[in-house]
Image 1 (tube, rainbow, N blue to C red):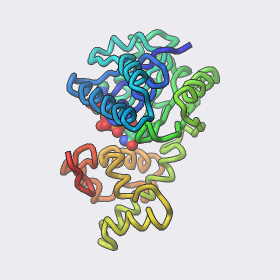
Image 2 (image 1 turned 135 degrees about the horizontal axis):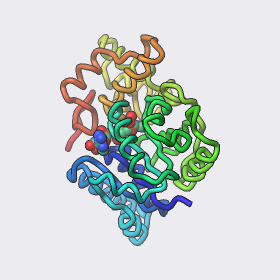
Image 3 (image 1 turned 180 degrees about the vertical axis):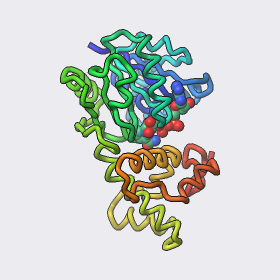
Length: 283
Ligand code: NAD
């Protein structure tokens, strides 16, 4: 029975997974490259749980217990204590494969490895380890504490037992688990990314203002946010990387990141996390 979950990468997604796992009773180890990245995650989780307490969605006692279950580290060897690793580092296959190779040498053979990748084939990362049968995709959605879905991606090497273990953990985390194919974009991004890119192209062509594009989809289709806002929330660097992977696999122009998206990324306007993307955000 898995009681400890390690989360590699303490960014938007990793901190969300850590928060949900701790609230669900798991011991959690959060790993990132620098102490300041861990501090930022701790602050984010503490702030979000404080908000839950102030809105009576969580008791102060449960908040304190959840916070006490999360440890932060910059030492990879600390992840050896986990039965499940959820990787949520930068969306780059080479960097992810290097991390999994290093983890494979550290973690016990029965530990399950998962990646939260949005677009990289699971088997490509699994073969960087000696445990491809205990390797799968566990794709959470942003913000993790709010979004109800996990895409569980089984590679051609993932065992039935691993799939069953991960389904059970996904349900303990309070999420609905759908099985998605190990094909670029899985289910959600395969459908979502071309839509977001079409909105960016529309804006780039000056066919409509950013506000009108977003309001049109919010009010015309009842989406909770418009496509340009959603792109900012995902992170424009992450979105561009996802598009590059999808395009590299499928060779369809609709998956190619639009030039404006590339320019914004080059300018460091990475969306909400950077304070600026299609829109400006306060600190
Ligand atoms: P982010 O930029 O907020 O966080 C990434 C974190 O990983 C940073 O803290 C960074 O310091 C850390 N990191 C980078 N290289 C590392 C390494 N070698 N070892 C340890 N830590 C390292 O990114 P994010 O939005 O949280 O995305 C993380 C992953 O989740 C990506 O694979 C992304 O595709 C995926 N994802 C993102 C979203 C989204 O909406 N943002 C949704 C689903 C999945």
